[in-house]
Length: 176
Ligand SMILES: Cc1cc2nc3c(=O)[nH]c(=O)nc-3n(C[C@H](O)[C@H](O)[C@H](O)COP(=O)(O)O)c2cc1C
Image (cartoon, rainbow, N blue to C red; front, top):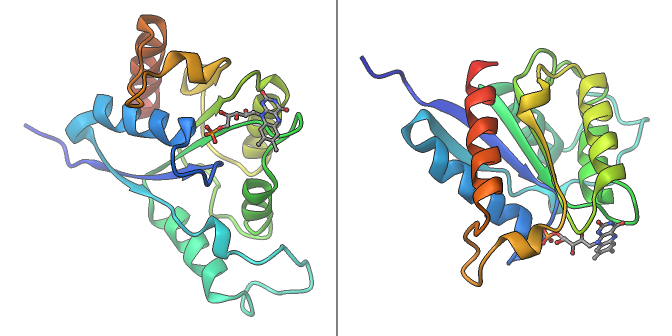
């Protein structure tokens, strides 16, 4: 008996075309195979700066679309670099738009920070997402330092250890 694929919303904290984080998302998608139907959220750059004066009902369509995309997903995968020892502003801004909602409550989440170093951003990502109420586990969170050295020129993972860690993360995420 084959189970229906899980609808996974992937959010990449980097908007670079040849982003290492995007390549990690694609590697995870390949590992998960038919278990996931992955949708990459492409609207980060369209979200306005968060403004607390804007009530949920008055929120711009881009914000409503973002919230609906999270709400409609079976799980969320966030993969981000660290910028100046923190989360990239564009990702933090998007997350701020969800604070007044329950879209992340009990949502299964895999949380990855892939960067040169990335320790501080990873701590922050896990703290922020737990505060927003996601369901995650230690095995569904992964810090990948030195990410660029772990990808080849075509963007494929060239580290056996990282491949194993990504497989473990997919297994853990599927069990959340
Ligand atoms: C504005 C900026 C700030 C950065 N600050 C950090 C940092 O604090 N820590 C770190 O590990 N890497 C830092 N980096 C390097 C990024 O982590 C690295 O370029 C990463 O591969 C970017 O992810 P991407 O390939 O998915 O775009 C910074 C890069 C930029 C552009």
